[in-house]
Image 1 (cartoon, helix red, strand yellow):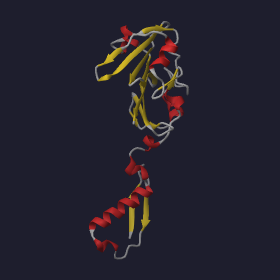
Image 2 (image 1 turned 30 degrees about the horizontal axis):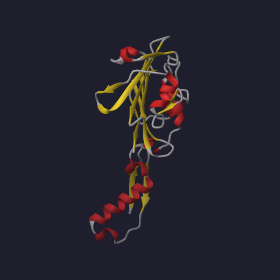
Image 3 (image 1 turned 30 degrees about the vertical axis):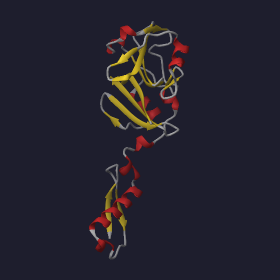
Image 4 (image 1 turned 90 degrees about the horizontal axis):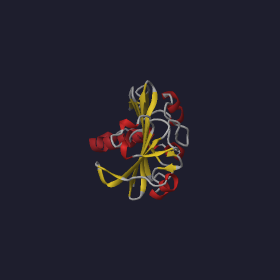
Amino acid sequence: MVLNILAPSNKTTISLSIYLTGFFDRGPVKARIFLFMIISIVFPSVSGGPASAAEKIDAANYTILGLEIGESAWHDVQSKFGFALAFGDETDPEAQQMCFISNRDEALLLLKFKHNRLRRLRLQSNKNQFYKWHFCTESNQVSKYTATASGIKLGMRENDIKAILGAPTEESNTRLQYRFRNPQKTAIIEIQADLGNKRLVSLDLSTLMN
């Protein structure tokens, strides 16, 4: 028996020669189970979701100003920035947020905490895009030049972002979305890069922890 299987890229068809004389006489259910096992071995990403979700990512890609999502705590931010006003998150009653705005330009850095752990970092070029920006604390550490430890920064070209992070999990004309596992494989890291004229205007880093 020969099976023609279309690869996940939709560009390659692979033929598998399987000698199963009498096997499929045992019933359609067993036959389907066997075929699924074969396909899962050949193309593990078919049964496991997008390949990018299984790839590990260096922590430098989700660390800004020494603050790492999933690892840094509330006191780490206070040690770095000093006092800042905390406010709630309407979408998550258990979460607290704080933000900082540049005293040199319009950049804004938003931080979200849950159970004392940093769960989200959002860096954006226009503070007015965040409706609670007036709750933010001014800081000379935040500006349009603020970047991840791996070098992703506001104004960066789309191709340069891809050179650092690789091919996106999902992509549109104005957004690149990535989904990775952290090096310890204990959390999912999501990265969303919003673009304007093919340049980065907002970078959103978040984690889904076990």
